[in-house]
Length: 289
Image (cartoon, rainbow, N blue to C red; front, top):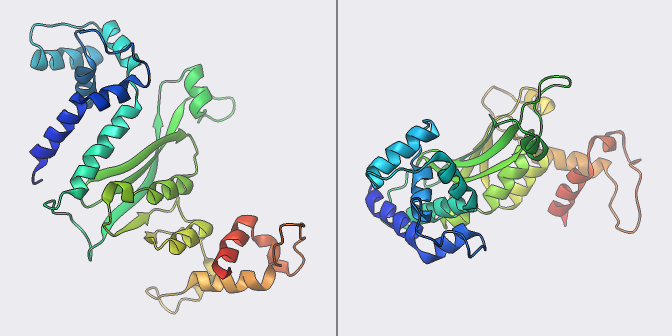
């Protein structure tokens, strides 16, 4: 990757900057003040360079490279780590990504001029404690042994292999809602580069699709075989185009009464009216307004 060394230098300079120090302190002026074995910059470097080993081996390897002959205990390291603002790493990777996409010499991989982004979610087991169960939720079945788990939502540049945004959520989170939030702010990272978003079968949502169309967001989503059954049956071949949203709009226009803010309407206009929630009504009314 061209100029990667220069961008790493920018990251190192960022970690040593006064503004990043203040971000790491998270408003507490009494932390990272004394000259300790593990100052703020070493703490950040050691966490970024973790290799998946035990903490003892990680510390031994890092200190042998950065401070030969110096030893730090695990309790001392963990005590320092508790002082660090975890959002500092979000700030750092956003800083790195912005530099990458704003560099005019960066050779971006695209398809027809579009960055290919992928929205995806995953479940990750975390240590099961009363605190993690309360914050993230229990993934076990009723009566089973409790197991804490987080939901990870990620927006990824598939061709340039860059994570653009990521969030930690409660288990069984709304992946589409998280993806919409990340897509809405992605230009803060990639600038004015055009992009398209790919999604798997966990994401399809007609209201979300309509909002993305309204926001001029290009996307491609893999659907379940049970999605849009009538539209599938109307296809003339396995490789054909069909305007799903126009058909849905026409159907909803015929079966949902107008919405007035001063009263509640019962859905009595047609038999199909009960198939659509208020979310669908708002989405389609926006298109007609």
